[in-house]
Image (cartoon, rainbow, N blue to C red; front, side, top):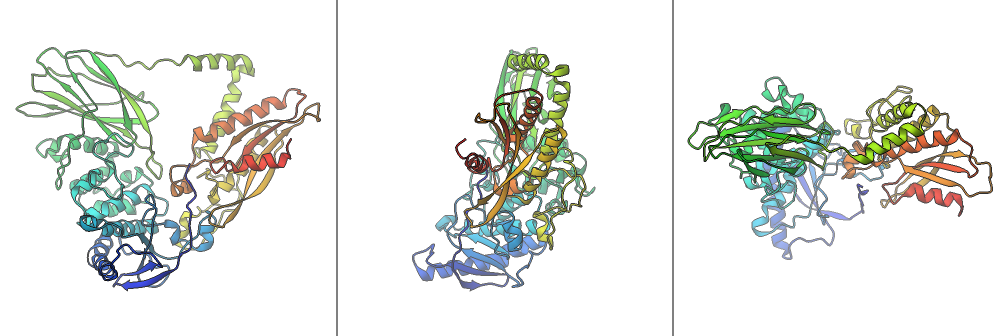
Length: 591
């Protein structure tokens, strides 16, 4: 679960000022023992900001906001946790708006940097400022987007010439913001290298167009101006990039598989096989990542290559026949709706091979999903996904136990999960939250009173998470269940208290003297980061499905007589020290 950020107030003094930036240093914090050397280092980094970073970012994306009216970006020099980024988007909100998320706001344009890189690594201090400024401009222009803001921010140091190309594939990355070339199949793949591929293929203007698209995640590629070829074939673009990582050759397919400015290392093949020998295997692919399969020739009759991906995600591939003396030839690879693909291999002479680059396409959410899926492959092999006997047995038991084979219950379960997952409108809601100013767009979305809207997040600390209680009450009403709300205070480590609510469904038994049986499920959700959770945490497995099952179980138990009282509890704060469960236990008073 995403931890709530811990903030603390510091005293900082102004130590230097540039044309577009002013530096404050936390009292008692020093990154160099020599005071004169420290002052010179601060002056140099401010000069780099004014002369290199600021002009580059403004030319690409526009000027940063100036909500505090001081005409400059603030650099706060002080200790920072390794995982903390240089920019905190909630600083662009008012204090009141930020507190609705359980955090405080500096109400200004602040970049956080410890400036603790030294010697040959000192350039990473300036790189952090470049990342922070790019993220700040993007965060002000499009608060909802997380993916492109982080990627463009991490890419900015290379654009400014502050780091080497190796940072694009993670082999020289002091801030650990990108993936290592040793693991291209990991979640999010070679993301910074993908930006370099886009810039080389379509020009630098595509970076600004990504910011201005206002589409979330990978959808931004679909929303590019028609001048970009990428606007018509996003999935194909990702597949081209994957094969470019292997080929890096401008002499084939009109330069689609080429990097114009850098020469990245080839990804290590995930598997290698002979075209004339039956073989098979399974590889893990990060969603948004890439893998390469290589089939070598020996002059004998080849068997077809078949692949079966996880149907839960979309797949795309590109293949190339690499002849020892040329010419190379692009081969067609198409995954069907069941995530299966077949490639009939040509006869391959010794020294010839076929390389297949495969991408597990990311979804259209605001951030890349840090997960992996499986790809089965085989030469002279038929794709087969084994049947789960446990699932088959469960289906049989369900059909026997529920009226009509459980058809109505299944429908209600799916509808509830869809509403908790934000896939369909939740039903009438209360009047929408309001907040002035463009940077407050993160805090709320415009909602009219009584207009059905889809849930945007179930994160406990997000204002939108409060709407989930109304949804749960509606879901209970759809099943004819009585529901009561039990509200309790939940303090954060930042000294901010919110009111969270459990929803309780009490089913009296014929013997009220008995202690109740409690069936509980937490309804909140969280992603890997606080910011992503605040925008969109709608996990179906954790725990929309559990809530739907608890509601359906309550409906079933309400129709039969039972001696022991039953309480079905839908709990808040399950991702935050089980806050709702603790309050429920306390409210029972030991019973």
